[in-house]
Image (tube, rainbow, N blue to C red; front, side):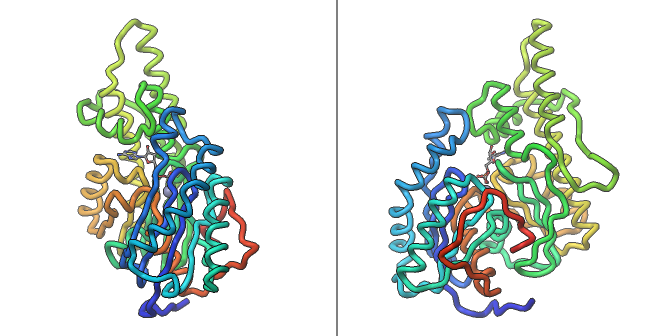
Length: 342
Ligand code: KG4
Ligand code: ZN
């Protein structure tokens, strides 16, 4: 399907799928006029993870202010908007509903179209805020809730070629961090700790069947937990930095090799990496090296577009808008939603 990428657009997007209340205004799919994110991280930290009911309540408290701030900072008037885009799913249902209802109200009040967006397409399109996409491409989306390899042959066309069979990559980081006594979210903590450690422990790599582009992190997670218990039972002090470094090396190696294998299999002209885990230093470095030696252009968005935000939802929503994707006021949030339907 060909879409008119030259058409001028001004899109307000809303994202409330997890623990960030976010709104942004993006012009022509690539120019970020405003990007407001109210994070609840500190609130959930004391519970050691995101508490869904608490998240919904905070979204309700924040959403109006965040949307108004996004419009104010963008310098545009409500009448200049062409559409309101919103994350329909996947995510926490109570959290999603807050954003979806707000978007419906705004679309109705201003008489503009409502565009539903799949959260993962947002993570992928975060890359278009920094570089124009080249097709066909392979995108690795790694976050607290997702681990997906997505093949795209053109704008707005998504085909999942690999996914996790158990935990998401970020979830594995968070669970292993908790076992090591590190605070939530564990990814950045392991990232930091690993820099001081050696890959002294031989943790498994889950390659799965020959040629599979799927992932599995539960075996690795159990291996780390078993290692810690064994060391403690023997009265030895666990070297947490070595455990972190060895765990991270295993995750990084599998993510990098499978991403490059997917890119080669699908003759990709570009490799994208997105989602919170792409903030990881080792993964960024190893992905860059592997892409370079395979002769593949690699794009990883800056950190502010890697973690959940609404500018990425606006970027993906612009493509949905140009494709003619619309929702009416019966739109509902959906905890699980297939990217291939978008
Ligand atoms: O994309 P994101 O902000 O939210 C979701 O959509 O899930 O990703 C959050 C995840 C958490 O699991 C967090 O531990 C992980 O990204 N993360 C990292 C790093 N920074 C955040 N994982 C590894 N290394 C990091 N530096
Ligand atoms: Zn996300």
